[in-house]
Amino acid sequence: MSDTRLATALSDVTMAVEAELDRLIPVPATLEAQVHEAMRYALFAGGKRLRPFLVLASADLFSVPREDAIRVAAAMEMVHTYSLIHDDLPAMDDDDLRRGKPTCHRQFDEATAILAGDALQAMAFQVLSEPETDPDPAIRMELVQTFARAAGANGMVGGQMIDLQAETVTYDLDQITRLQNLKTGALISWSVEAGAILGRATPAERVALAAYGLDVGVAFQIADDLLDVEGDATQMGKAVAKDADAGKATFITILGIEGARNTAAALIENAVARLDLFGEKAFLLKDIARYIIERRS
Amino acid sequence: MSDTRLATALSDVTMAVEAELDRLIPVPATLEAQVHEAMRYALFAGGKRLRPFLVLASADLFSVPREDAIRVAAAMEMVHTYSLIHDDLPAMDDDDLRRGKPTCHRQFDEATAILAGDALQAMAFQVLSEPETDPDPAIRMELVQTFARAAGANGMVGGQMIDLQAETVTYDLDQITRLQNLKTGALISWSVEAGAILGRATPAERVALAAYGLDVGVAFQIADDLLDVEGDATQMGKAVAKDADAGKATFITILGIEGARNTAAALIENAVARLDLFGEKAFLLKDIARYIIERRS
Image (cartoon, rainbow over all chains, first blue to last red; front, side, top):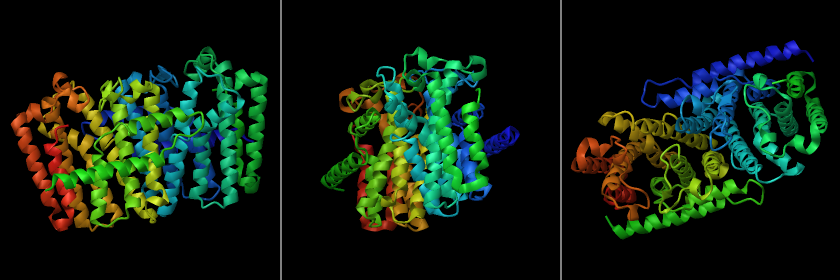
């Protein structure tokens, strides 16, 4: 594994997806411009662009045209960003900072933040459904359908619902795993699956990528929990150890720090093994999987 | 026009769309069930089901199978309901009652209400994209694409953004018209257009129905403003005269009560005239248009 190779690829994806988002969401010269400004503020507040990276790396396995895959990557980032905006609201996590900058509702106001999140979700489905994403409407339809499932009540939003209750209910390992599979795993897994859909993958390839995505998603969440305990606020750009302070069960309260680290490592090795059928060309998906548990912020 | 005919049709649509919503959103036996309960609470809190009615009446012009059109009607009602849930939040209109019952965030809590709205939006796109909605993926994609536009930053959400600013900016007639075209008109117009998309309407038919929808949408909003001033809280099931109290410009503050009533009537006559090319079979769309400005709640 080459750190430089991965760093270059990450930086390329960040530039490409930000250019696409910039193109897809211009600020109109009309009365409603503030909602566009809030959408852009949240979209361009930084971030690792992990999910767009996974979309593009997966699509590259099948030589999907970059101009198609980048739209799917942008749609993914829109939904991820909307979930962060709503998650940061006073009624939810009540966070003032995100990546070292004021959260959307602190920069604008709560109502604008709610609307910006709502509009980002709509825009994501709009982008997926447009002919520019793929010439075949059946492929676009499959993207919309699987994405809506992964983002909704039986996916990401369901995971957030479970997470909300974690302050009053003490979950066991199975329950924490379900929480994270829905909250983080569903969209991370979809990012990888989306590349397979665009790439007309075989059923075996698609199953392998979806399984890789689920494992990476849970490992990512464990790594996040570890950073929450071990990280320092400057590096993270947000308040740390909030979950532990709130008395919430996490992978770490259940497995301990060493146990959690070992579980994450095992998940990543498992995820990487799933990619064997792609041979050498899956190197970026392998690199990013290992990076996820090694990152410091 | 027959009042009984319309009342029967409205009641049939209400029963059909509620049965479909019940089928589409079961409460799972899993940890995230509360978000489904909140979605259902808001969906089944009553309401005129005007938008589903428009979808079905429009689809009937083209003899679209009822089992297809009802799914589109249900998706429409999901997005309408999500917009009401978010609109009622403390950071937005801060309403405790909706149709005489506690609003979603009063019945559950704010976080659950935010999530229920988010999940309803995702579910709407999921339903539109599924093969059961129409066998042709190109038709489903056109539904998703036009719906996402009508619901997003350049449609309904944009209108809500303009509306939020109405407490600090005094709009003129053009600006109020834009506000309402986006906030209410876009989705009402889409409801009618959706029937045309499902029905493989000719371009002329589709233009006529979209124009009918926009006129009806603005007339509906004027009628709402009139009820806001003239209605009584018992009949409306919510606080009345809120807009006037907040010093917001409305069609009525600009046009006066008589002027607003005349404008709404002219819009409805215009809307009805658009339907001439369908002849007699457009009777329900004509009936509902006239009902909209005559209703008392």
